[in-house]
Image (cartoon, rainbow over all chains, first blue to last red; front, side, top):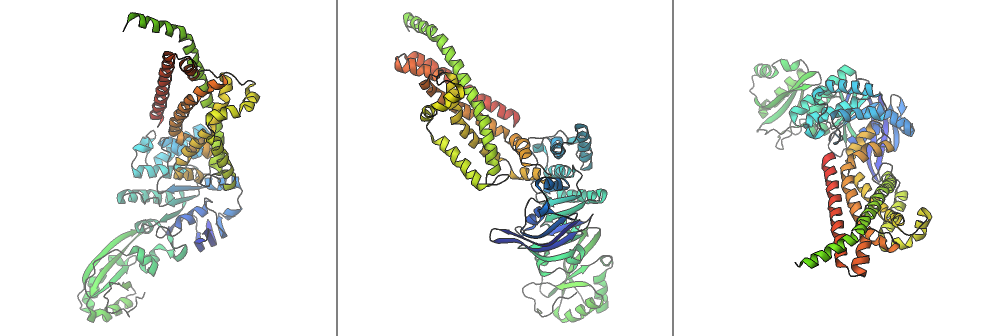
Length: 331
Length: 226
């Protein structure tokens, strides 16, 4: 669906994207993840030609974006919807008119527009608001209008630029549900840019981690979160007050979270653990969890031995006063 | 006040009333026509400016710089000098250099670059995100100007149109120099040259009312469509 090879882009002397390679399969939800300024929005805009690129190749459905004529590019964009962090709706038009706008630009017949807009508003749950002014809507409702507008032209690909970053957690959840629903119902390919880990975990099948315009990691979301590379760790580490002793983060892949692994380990080893923190999280279609346990130094080796034997994902946490820095995390 | 003074004032007023009425009409025609024309010309100019502006839709810095200099150049002329300097051009366009029609040409030439600058500013004020959204579903540059920038900037444009109209009302007083007529001309002719202070006061009162009216009209439509 989307194939990027050896992509480079500069703003003047500054390189903003460096040797990016990625592909997105049809129907996939692909995340571009990174801190602000990592170049992720620029990468997204290379996909629909809102930004040019200096070298390399961006192919959308086997067509090189750079090779499009002016009109061809407009045509390409009509096949790709885009959703924005700041919604970018026209404040002087009402809900209906905003959603109808792309259809008017492409000169669809009025009767069809009427029908299509109401269909889209039903999809995003805003049928009753069709004549509401944009200013009277909540953030979540505005983003629903933004999504309806992005879907108006029946795109094959939906680009989301920090679509939930301006929303509160609860609203974010409902927008993510909506995107998930759209992905499954319309078999729509979604590329989303975000710095919010809950968005990535909840929605993305695969992800690309970007920092300073350079690929840091790429792969299945689940794998990356179970054994995160250094750069991803920085983004996902929650702040826990670690207690003296050795803190180990255990990560549970599918099925394991149901088994009471810690109590079993305690029983078998005859060792007591303190629990520092933990969480179960909903990933795309799975539930994954992690648990941070605290072990006394004298029990460390046996514990690690047990974890290795059970083939569990784990890592020692850096708490600044780790007395065993030489014990490298291992998977 | 002495009855005879009031009678005298009334007599004078009745005497100049037809001329005041004619002046009011002349002023209205000059101001409305030149405001309308300068908005149209200004819009055409602003279209090129917003297209070529370095922050615009299709940046062409060289072309923009030329437009920028031309607009600044035209705006730096004091109106009274422009009025006289372009007399040949005025004759070419309307075939005469006296009367209201002849005044409309320099008024338009003076206000068009002003209007262009104001429209360009209003277009630049439109949220860039909204423009990007329109691009993202394949709107072309002209569609963005006519269907995004123009409607989104309309409230600001209406307020600015009132400013342009009021500025031209002020300029139109100078149109008397080329026999343009209007209230300003009347005030100068009677009030200044013939020491008939009352006529000057009448003219000024009408001008004040016109300014108030134009501003209120602008405010009304601004509120209505915002």
